[in-house]
Amino acid sequence: MEAQASSTAKEPDILEHLARNEAFANGKENVIVLRDRFWHEGPNGRHQCMVFDAMGPSAASMVDNFPATAKKFESRYRYPLWMARLILRQTLHGLAYMHSNGVAHGDLQPGNLLFAIRDLTMVDEKLLVQQHVDLPNGEEEGISFKKVPNPNGHGKRGIRKVSSRTDNDSDPHLPLYIAYSQSLNDFVVLDQNFQLKISDMGGAYFFDQPPIKTVTPLGLRSPELVVEGKISKDQDIWSFGCLIFEFITGRMLFCIDSTDLGQSNKAVDDAASNGGPLDPNSSEADDEHLLGFTYIIGKLPLHLRSRWPRSPIYFNEKGEIIKNYIGALPPGFDPSTIPPIPPLRQLFEMEKPPDMTVEESEVVKDLLCWILQYDPSRRPSLSDLLQHSWFQEPLDKGNCKIV
Image 1: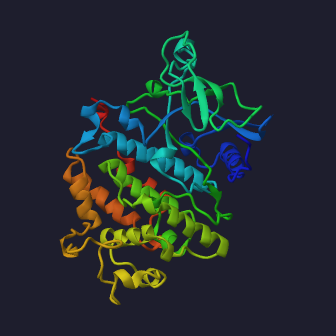
Image 2: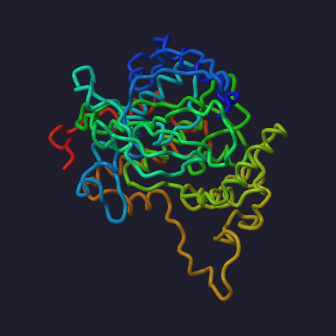
Image 3: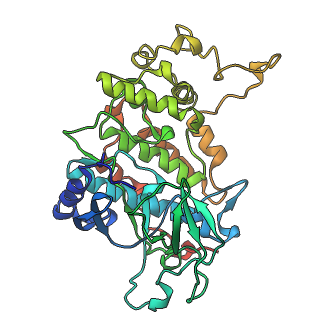
């Protein structure tokens, strides 16, 4: 429980910069606001604390709270099309506000998009007070908990009394209670007026101060990040393109096996220490991702393929795929029976929601192909995207409901 030096020391400075700057103010409401920060001196060290508005769940989890009929699509869950579009529109506005102020997010993903909640000033305090959790004695995260009375009813998550450390070490600074995060799902407004905010600036950076390590999720990495280790604001635009596909279809565009995550993190660490690009030799996750690029986006450009040391395993000199799987196959397995991943337009057509019209589908496919290009200079800017018809057209308010 000892305080550790923060690896995101710039986060408060970035938040304060965004809070006081009024440039492109119409996207400011879609970025989390730092209300205060202070240092706390305690028995376990010095902690920097940041104060934000109370927020609801993230876009990664909110759909789990919808009625089954509203979220189920074949074997997966997704947002209603009108809601996915609003989530993406607000994300675009928030991201454009950040970029207009010289800040890249670096970790744009559904888990960092938070739903705002309604004003709690008129809510009965009894609905907000954290309860003692009435659970049997147990252990969690190296700490033993005791059963405590729950005088106010049965809270799902609340305050639990700490009994002792499970490793029997003495710890004079062990807290008496641990308070768990309290769900505010019931206070989110789920109609066409809902508001979303980009949060978690732990991976954010000023344009002229890019980090040497990235926190971008594996499946959202851009080709230049995977192959060259290049970290720039262009990554945000690539990630946003992937999120368009994900929020509309309910599935990730690039599903990278996370069991190789440790290897991929090692590649990032090695690149950071050597001051150079990622080494794909150390990660089959990179191989899987680059094969995915080839199938979905198109043939890898020579300048990327030539910087990928493992390229000869998968491609011939013409850039054609000669091995379409990662690792080894079981004895007797015919690799020609592995179906190829469809290209982007075909994949979207297969995965799109049934209520999307043919016309809208064509617009979104064109939009995806515009964003997800190998050459960052050919991708649209955020200003270009803000002017795109799919983000400009008003929603049909009669369809903005969850049933």
